[in-house]
Length: 95
Image (cartoon, rainbow, N blue to C red):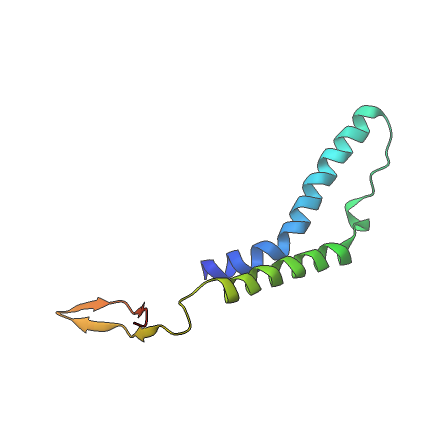
């Protein structure tokens, strides 16, 4: 569950969080300088932020699918029960 939140949820909301942080600092700067040029939160670039989140999520999922895991020619050994202890499954490189 945590892996799914990190791989899908976090990259999807990251552009919105960064935009919110930028907006807060931009408003503070505009108030200090005496002008109000920062748009309100409701007029944010929602489609652009959503597209950036989807692109970031897709990039992370593609990297995970292609860049991690065992080599294609390795042999998988399923989990087994030995002496009352479950030994986790593992991949053995083909010789």
